[in-house]
Length: 479
Ligand SMILES: CC(C)[C@H](C(=O)O)[C@@H](O)C(=O)O
Ligand code: SF4
Image 1 (cartoon, helix red, strand yellow):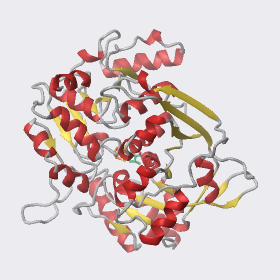
Image 2 (spheres, rainbow, N blue to C red):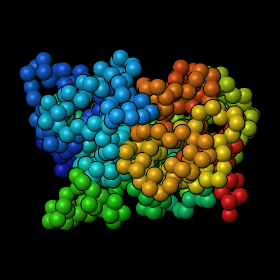
Image 3 (spheres, protein in one colour):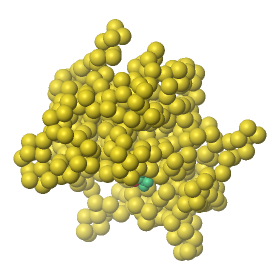
Image 4 (spheres, rainbow, N blue to C red):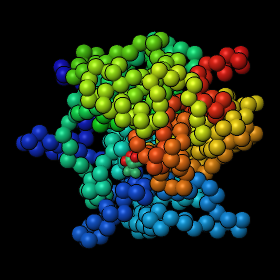
């Protein structure tokens, strides 16, 4: 009998091309996603070395980070030039490099354009049991469809373009099990914030996390992608949920998914992937679903998590002296006083978007709160940025754009937007943003910007009240 293995170990073993004496392995890469920020130097490296792209058919390129989210074509249908010189250069490089290498390139003006981590699963490019890389730390998102997916650096991007392989050491395995039923108003974003709050921003270092338990079995694929997306914020190399019937139903018929007999063969293999009974993980962390509240961050690390019913913590409430110092610094940057109720904190900016929370389900949840209400007078920017053109169209078909526009939100074109300050969407210095993105680092949304990470429903609730708000109050009001 073969030794029982975890999901991660099965995918790893299936992709080993060569084992080196030092324990590292050459791993075959099934899928490579490419965006404009981390690819120009990689393509340039290939050119200088006189190398070509080995498997352009396994590579997909789409611009997202540097694109403004305002209209992309003028009234005559011509592309509107990008004002920022560096952004324009990176975008032009991708637009030239990808097609020249025979790589499918989704243009900024195409309906399928979107954030690379939204586009992959949506196109059926990201599949269970595959190894997926991208020069982007949030590649772990694709673990939501049962892929082993992780971010790589620009030199590795070049290596994968040239060889379709990567030299890696195997990670340790961590099981994060959440059993039980999530409470009213609690969703995937609250679950991952609670997990990171528990394990810490470095807690996953050296591990690939498998999310197990009834909460993830019952969770939609969109929700699983949200959870896996933020694995990196818990320090992990990747996060993954075992593929199941929900995964297969989500992927079936997507443009780049296998069809016909190939589909049946693929499903048969995917069904063998879940962790075997008796397999062991290097570490297991257990959370009780009923103890997870609608959550958000107060500081500048994704581990700085409190329930919305909580208060801004005092630095001396932390045991570890280095955490005490970090908390004091965070609070100064965030302009917060210990003891303040989170719900008394006013916000001037709202961002609903990013590869964490810009899929259709996210927009539906935000719209359910925005419906029939209006953005508060003290809120100066309230952006809703769909993760892709296809999400945008679907939302429009469902009338969600009207709900947001009537409520005073802006309805934008797809892209990374205010998640990071690499395009015109920024939070002004000293202002606060209720954001559905995944990073609350100093300066992340613009120099001096103060970020509170939370769910789409909580962001919409903050928009209509003008302060951080327990979404359950607005949901109860509806009932
Ligand atoms: C620009 C890119 C390389 C970066 C990443 O690696 O994640 C960005 O997507 C981010 O979220 O910070
Ligand atoms: S949306 Fe944010 S986290 Fe996601 S890829 Fe873009 S910049 Fe990175």
